[in-house]
Length: 297
Image 1 (cartoon, rainbow, N blue to C red):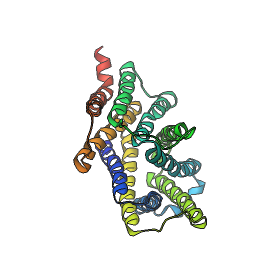
Image 2 (cartoon, helix red, strand yellow):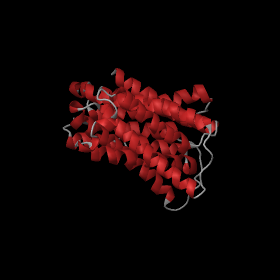
Image 3 (tube, rainbow, N blue to C red):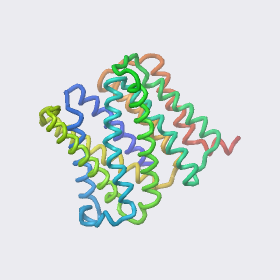
Image 4 (cartoon, helix red, strand yellow):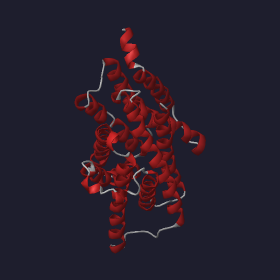
């Protein structure tokens, strides 16, 4: 339970950092690039096997999956950023958190997860709660397929990432240090970001690299590392069914982020948003205790 709480707290902190980036006009790609380099370095520092480059990572069975995840990570962020900036922040968050359906179904069908009707009611209700919590009156600056394509990419990509991390932990975590795997994922994401950055320099579409982007990226990388490593450890603890853990984590992140945004950024919420927060808490409790409730009925 401890690792899940830490993961939720630092995941919420990442969302707040992005809000701070907007206030201080930090270039997203710059901060993201430094973030993945920082997270990869932390994985290498804390790995029991030493730096990942010395582990013959290309010979491991998990290498193709980490390669795929590394490229996917930074592309999902790009889609999320476009969705938040051009369509609406609320659409970006809802697309990301509603993707919880994908890892839940993956855990149920492929990893012998348990799913009763109380859990299903809780998941469906939590998705509605997330929608009401983050709904704002924002107008899209995209037209045509962009209004559907980018949110859909966030939805599918986030769901695939959570499912892949679940599979990575379930299949390989007992046989190797998860820092090796995550170090490679973050490293590949960093290299992908660097390639994009270099292309933008060549095409003269890139802005100057300022110190605030480095500082913001280092902070984001630390939060990213702690959040992801704690999620993997929470999955390994097996104190909660994986069909339950992902909905609880995602809905809790929305509730915590919204609450902290009110305190730190003085955000104003409508009655509908407040109702969403209350429903988030109710459905978190319902999902987490679904087995107990189901046993009484």
